[in-house]
Length: 239
Figure 1 (cartoon, helix red, strand yellow):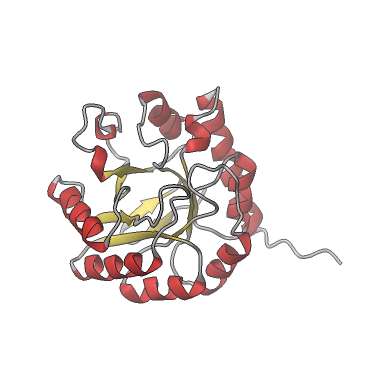
Figure 2 (cartoon, one colour):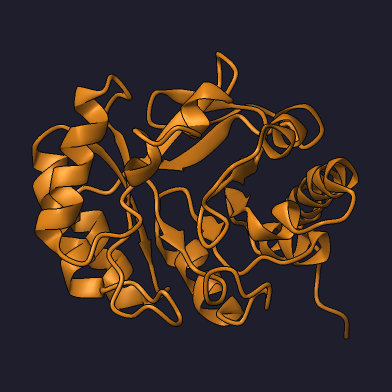
């Protein structure tokens, strides 16, 4: 696949490994994501950094780390976690996750915009996770986000692109990388997201719960590549 960028970071892969309900990484999961799916970015919850099984100990050199604020319930929580990650030498990338509930893990749009604005002004490269509402997306762009991470469906649900039309509108209007996050449960759903013109797909639960983890990782790589190629081919609607 052709190279592409998010800010100063250059990638060839368009599949990223995330963290959510399956926040506890295993070496097999990370190895499969890197070696079979080709991932070049892995999101790590700040709250796991000081645990005995910290994913940082399993991630090979050369992989971009995207710390996330999983567990934050306020702007203050998110800002504090971002500073913890930077103080630990993880750089200025931060994925903002500020949840409003413990059942669907839906993000708080207002707090997410506020945290994005604060952290962007402090020099952070902010990747906000949010429900794909165009008005919120525009506010996040104005707040200084570097890429947008709309949810496809509730985190860990594996229900696929339930917000398909909203994400397609973001791709059409927003001039930032759109990385679909949460709810992608199988390779065909990742392919569909890429066919919309999304820059990348982030998944975790679909891989972590597969019986053959390595094969699932490879299937995601092929699906993402096929979907991106399909988008570039500019399919015309049938008569």
